[in-house]
Amino acid sequence: MIEIKERQTAGFLKAKILEVLGSYDVSIEQIFSITVDNGANMLAAVKQLKMVLDQTMLQQYEELYTDPTEDDDNHSQMVIDGLSAEFQEQLNLIRCSAHTLQLAVLDVINKSDDSVKEITAIAKKCRGIKYKTHFDCHNASVPPVFNQTRWGGIYDLIHSFHVQRDFFEKLAEDFPELGLTNDNWIFIEHYVQAFKPLYVCTKKLQEKHVSLPDFYLYWLKAISELSNFPSNPFAPQLIKSLTRRLEALKTSRAFQMALYLDPRFNFLNSKFFKVEEKLAIQGYIIDTYERIQKLKPMNGTDDAEQSGTSQHSQFDDFLTEMLGGSLDDSTTSDTTTFIQQVKALDGEPRQGFSHNVWEYWMRRQKTHPELFAVAMVVLAAPSNQVSVERAFSGLALVLSPHRAGLGSEVLEDILLIKLNRDIFEQIMPSYEWKEFTSAS
Image (cartoon, rainbow, N blue to C red; front, side, top):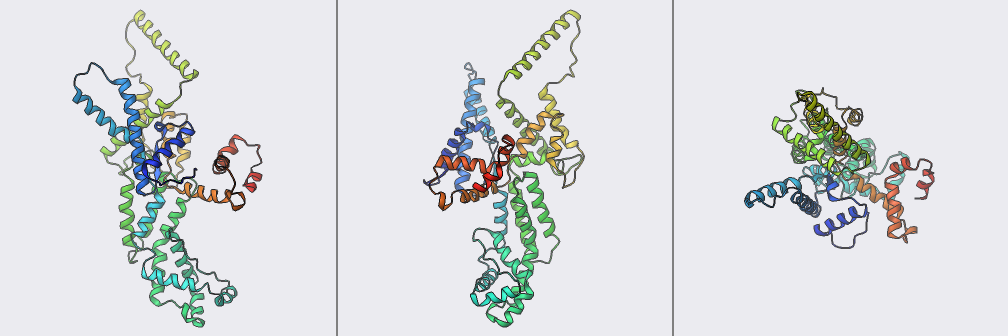
């Protein structure tokens, strides 16, 4: 986390992102996905980062594959243009699911709705000192006034009235100015019934890590529950908005790969993907595998393995020359085996919605190491930006008024440990982490 004082234009954000990546010795080629909200500047920044990746990978391609004797410049340019579009897709854009869910809600109703305004006005009046005794005597809670930027606050406000209806109706007998009309109560009943599934979905998306398939299931469950209330005036509109926005989210390559690698969606005789979609997604997975292979550091073990493979091949050639015949053509390379494993995924048995996909792939770590490596990359892609909000909350706790003099480097180091404590606990298990928590 860095402090920014300049205007947050797309070009500035792109430069800062590359700067931070460089400080951790991470190249743009190592980035699989970027999860952003729907802000125009962030979307434009990702587009510019794609162009950086495009230029980097094209340069590598030209160094390795360009033939200086090639005369057909038009053909070469067509190949480069095609590769350019392909390279840019290597950086997967994922729109924040939590933010998109909020937009789906606001498609239907927001704080400007007349009924919401009326109920909010009553909630603010309840904060008057003359009503405090009544709330205390009946052990009732004052309805919370919501945060203007979070739709969940509206739900909390209306839900508070809903669960305390008997109290508020009796309160209105003594204080008519706090009375809600019959239309208000009907609105409250319909609102809580329709928006509760979305509220639960929002809370689920606030977990530490929500993979793309898990988010998809939470979203579908909300739609399924809404379909149980056909007479609710909000339900049809919400279903329509949720379905439309979900289709837009599913266009992401990362999203498609994640669902293909999940046996809850991709299984024998599954109707989830069309044949042409499966072929395209299989290509995306193979491309990702090749990127992982390319980024692997060359070490002594790899060299030894390659040397052993080379000697084994030479010895086979020696035996062929001496004995005649030829090697069995059914012997396949690692890449061919990987492709076969990718295609075999749609022949797996179906798993229930509560199936633990992480454990599913952990069991395959040794039997399908190549597929496991791709699955860990794809399923690690965050479906939302909740971790960013959590980081800002952590910053507020660290940078208190009594510690306003912390230097930027010290602050960054504290946040790095605080926000990644689970990793550091594995690295330094003997450290007194309870004392660190109380100190920070």
